[in-house]
Length: 121
Image 1 (spheres, rainbow, N blue to C red):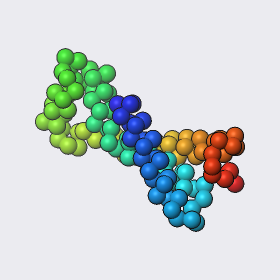
Image 2: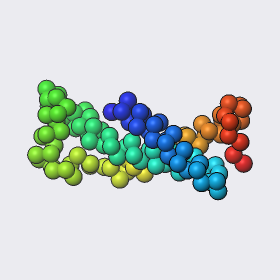
Image 3: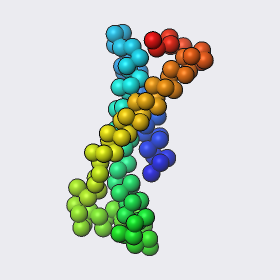
Image 4: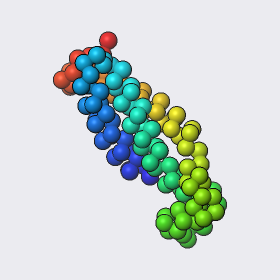
């Protein structure tokens, strides 16, 4: 789940950042907003994989099942809601984590003169 989540997070961050920079009034807060939304998107899309991972790790599901069998079993017993158990907390955590992380990354790039963008004040 980490690789798909990271891929979604980084690609969506860059795309959202491009969209936000079209608005000339956006400053450093664009990094916070882009980071938060990209983190939420990645976490929201990968929550079913995280639910399966957690259920396998805790012994709720048999380790003999494939990913698709696990998803099917959760869908049959808990419905679609079961696939998104804990999604609210994951979205909040990921939004904050990604907003801080991407903002710090952009600030560090600018501080080291590795960015074409001005240093956030």
